Amino acid sequence: MTRATVAARNDVPLEVVRAADAANDRQKRVLGDKIEGHFRRGGGTVSGRTVAVWGLAFKPGTDDVRESASLKIVARLAQEGAAIVAHDPIATENFRKALGGAAPSAVYPARWQDEVADADILLVVTNWPEYQELRAFDLAGKTLFDARRAFAPTHFPGAKYLSIGRQIGS
Image (cartoon, rainbow, N blue to C red; front, top):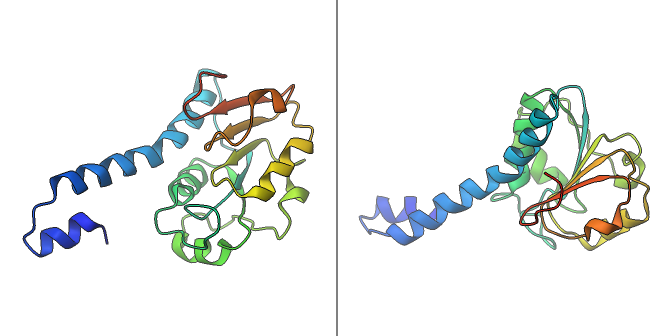
């Protein structure tokens, strides 16, 4: 339940909080819009592609997924026909419960490193320190969406690198 909802139930006007909640909700759609737009411009879609989503908690160091952008992203990509491989160091079980039946065929590997080679698209949604290891992988021919600007675009030669808040890629 949002702060704005609690305030409304108690007849307390919190317009600023309501506006902040709305802005946060819009921001969670930005990455999904960027992914969809990238493939649409190329004449394609995410349907039939394997999408690896790294980071399911709303921030590193927690298993809390209540405000996680990954919930909306995974549900949207699954609805569009993508095969989902999702990982988080500690929030996976909470994520599965919160996601419900929105991505019934999603796979949750214990070791994310084993899934990089088979992924067409990689999404770094929560910047857990262990995902820095991704820099050691050859991502040539893959598309990496970096939602947290965790990496420099130069880390992945041969890959299509897109990031929130950067004009790299398209």
